[in-house]
Amino acid sequence: MTDERHVFLLQRAQPAMVGLIDGSLSTRAPIFAIVLHTHKPFDAFIAGVATAIGAGISMAFSEGLSDTGHETGRGSPVVRGAITGGGTFIGGILHTLPFLITHYHTALVAAVVVVGFELVTLAYLRYRFFETSFLRSFVTVTVGGVAIAIVSAAVGSA
Image (cartoon, rainbow, N blue to C red):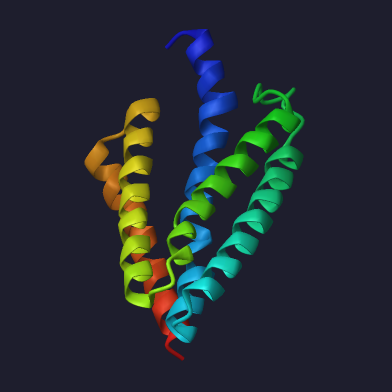
């Protein structure tokens, strides 16, 4: 691996993956719990927007404050924080957008399709940039997604 590729992976790709994975997985629970509980897609949309923004800010600060980048070679904490926060927001907002659809079942199906797209994309990015098996990556992120779906359904159905 070249030094340039190593720096790219460490300072750009890894913070982006952390953000995308966190945004895609962690924001799912409140959004789906709200829509399953209320059957009101717009309520889930509002919860999703707030969650995506809040998670993005939280992850930006977490990554930016995790180290100075000097000792680890991870680069500027501001840049890493911005990349991670932006990735988290994108990961969280994608499965939120279908809840702009006013019909409950249509919005829910559209959101599930988007979640499937997210899982495939995350697996592909891990395969592409980190030379992991696509299938292993897909199974790994899907296990996390299924665990979150179970929690969302349990809380939302309460």
